[in-house]
Length: 98
Image 1 (tube, one colour):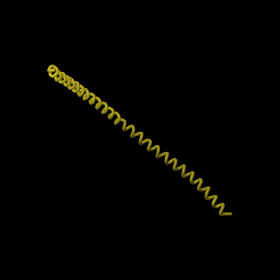
Image 2 (cartoon, helix red, strand yellow):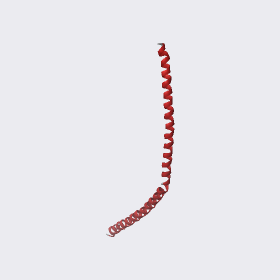
Image 3 (cartoon, one colour):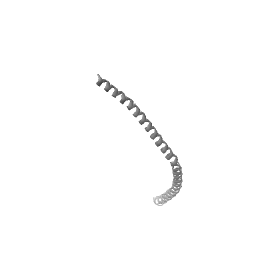
Image 4 (tube, helix red, strand yellow):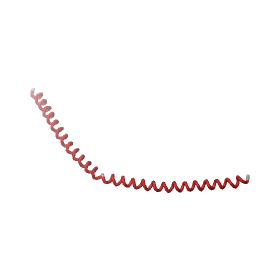
């Protein structure tokens, strides 16, 4: 029995030391992985930021196209409404003349 009382604490201490060493190694590796991930995120951020000018140009171009098409549609609608408005006034004058 005295053997177990002397042997088990030594085994537990050795296992705790191994767990501590493994934890330190994993912590150091985690620090390196986080550093690599941070560099990767920074690189992606720079690349996306470099494309902001292209997206700004596309946005401006689509705004101009929408403006032109809105004007064309408005003109066509005005023309159609004038054509139908003239037909309605001719019908009203013909009915009043009878």
